[in-house]
Image (cartoon, rainbow, N blue to C red; front, top):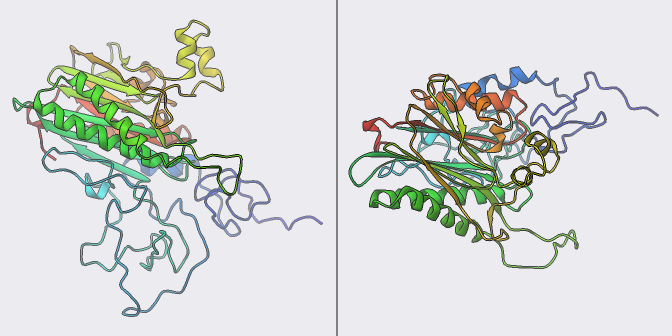
Length: 431
């Protein structure tokens, strides 16, 4: 007996874009009901809004059975909305008015993204559903009326401070955003401005990678904004910040225990992530990293040479450095992106890489995870996709780089921070 043919066969889930088998009635990734779903829009149509705004709040959501019909007004207990940062997958904290620091909180708390749904005030009646607008959102983030899961606040984040801007997005294929960032605009001891950016990519094969990246960014940023105003050397501060981040990630590891109950042969591994930092102080640019998140230098005058400022801790980089494979051969291998350095309790001894530069011209520093550089790997390609007005419009530059990654397929989480160089004198310490 053959199956009854469906009116229009989907090849990808319209909610999360996970590939589907012909017989699927529900998405195996997000649980969306496919029985009455319309065919998905083209990639260009589905990603156009990423250049300027948050995705539609009703898009990319999973569905489960309603728990209960909505109660009439006045019946039952009051259900307050979610304040920023209460979701376990959200970045920690809000902007610090003393340092102009932002730690990956939703865009509504920093630079508002055009088109983002309004959040209720302190006296509001709760968070409204992005699909049916009933407002009955349970503690797990699902609407009790229509059953749709609500977009996580960490799915898309963006902020702009004087001298630095950052954007992070879940991408088109992952069910959550495991990247994080932290950006700060501070004043040094002599009153001169400085900017700090920290970007981290959670290791998906590890436990709780989203928590690892958030912890790394928070810890590194905290040390940098404390040490730099005291006059500490930026390179030494960067080294110490990465070690502090490594300690924070290692502290997330659960106590050693036996095999998991549902799989006697599988043990829980420790949270892990990569990290890359950039600090601009006067005419000095300092970067630090562990793993394969990268920093690039893109000059404003595109007739001059761009540069990649970091060297990956990866299998491919080791093969090239040892002279065993050419760069093309190494990065074509399926093991190319296996990292050889990371932060986490099960990491080898963490050895932060640091480097300082004195650029002799104007430009921008691009700090990003592999969700972006996979689509612009060389310094020349990164410069090609970086808009010419990046130094004067860093947030729009970050948005366009995100859009480039999504247009290329968006197979991973995407996070990018843009730091103009040199800094404007008025850039210090304002949020």
